[in-house]
Amino acid sequence: MHCFRSLPALLLLSATALAQPKVSTPSGPIDFEEYEPVSTLKVAEHKITRSKYPFIDVHNHQYNMDNGDLTKLVTQMDSLNMGIMVNLSGRGFSSEVAASTRFLDQALANTHKTAPSRLVLFTNINFANIGDKGWTDKAVRQLADDVKKGAKGLKIYKSLGFNVKDVAGKRVSVDDPRLDPIWTKCGELGIPVLIHTGEPKSFWDPMDRFNERWLELKTHPNRRRTKDDSMSWEQLIAEQHNVFRKHPKTTFINAHMGWYPNDLVKLDSLMKVFPNMNVEIGAVIAELGRQPRAARAFFEKHQDRILFGKDSWVPSEYATYFRVLESDDEYFPYHKKYHAFWRMYGMALPDEVLKKVYYKNALRIIPGLDKSLFPN
Image 1 (cartoon, rainbow, N blue to C red):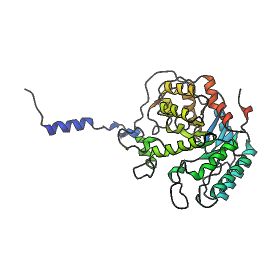
Image 2: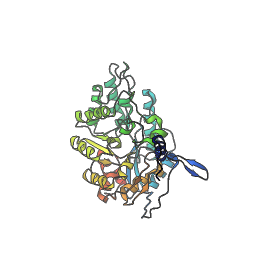
Image 3: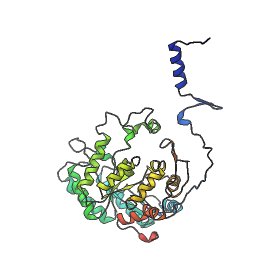
């Protein structure tokens, strides 16, 4: 005889079966955030702690270059085979022009004393008081003066478009006309603009079980964007693209691959539309490492316009970048689970492509770098 359960009982069973269980361990139950299994897959491993060729990191941040002892930093660079580090925080974060200027002056003096050819600085724009009479002219003069002193480029932070406001309290868009003379001046000076606009699109998406950045948003809630944010992801990116379009004679380096490393078909189309746009790979190696065949094809196609960048100074994390770019390893972990819980695969880039990404493209795009530090 068959035993039939009532509908409520069946629904209860279904809900129980679908509920995510907590796994019991000798130390107690664990949640998803703690679950980090060790792979049992037996495959070849090539853990690379030193790059095959010397490289230029075009996206780094150092906040003690003005008065710190840089000897240890250069020693750590040597251990990675880093030829040149580009510090994008050349004028610091101060809203006071005088304090920022002192930082740049002192940082240039300090780097020249320790390793003048190894440590390079980009300058920054002080957006305080934008909208005041003469602000644009003053910013352009300051930029030219910084370059004359030794700055090799301009870095624009993501604050532009997000929370930079003018003297009237209005948001300053990335493509604000008051900034056009700055982009034009960079083109005249022959320096690149490394620009960071927005964040990953997933930060604007609902924080639910379908969002693959859920764990990152849970552990770093300040990164989440909501409907209360004044700017959508699409509008921020469109504003950035307007800048590229309006200033074809200025060279731009789009930070984090323009937040399209997970859509290389779209990024490929943008590379065609904006020939003055280059990209760097800081903080997006996890996206490339999960699509090695598509990523390799993209790198081979656009090998003259991709630069190496990391975005944060954690020497041990460079190994993931080297392994994805150089090896053909399979299914190896990323260095931050919350950033990428998936596994990586190596692209095994050809040597000539690797050399361009590591140093040749940067040597061509950034003026005044010491080419003698690198092979032909």
